[in-house]
Length: 141
Image (cartoon, rainbow, N blue to C red):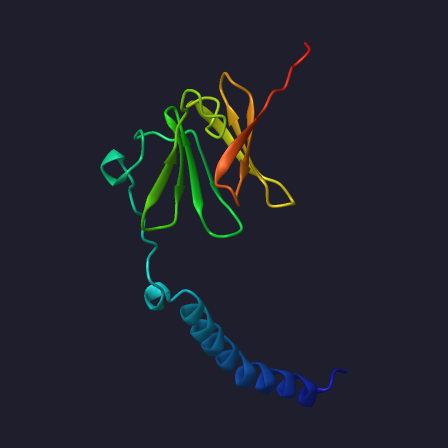
């Protein structure tokens, strides 16, 4: 024979705990999904009118200092959120980029910026001198 007080105790326990559990879960759920306290993200468009050499970018990187580097088909840009510094190829200037068509920008573990071009190899950016060193790479296929 089964003990009826045991069933009464279980029933009482469930009736006591069940409303508390559902109420607290509802409050937790609504608090976790209340997105009204957060500001929506703000996106800013940067164009030629703002200083870009071209409206389309091929690559973008944020370096360890917070600068945004944008590579285009007409040079690359250092953007600090307020102003832009444009780097374009200059004839007879060994401190300029080797080509204007930038395909990749990379920052290595030593915090050196490497700028890859479409047709003229790799460039190493010297932050102290604010100029580039062209590195020629030969690919053997």
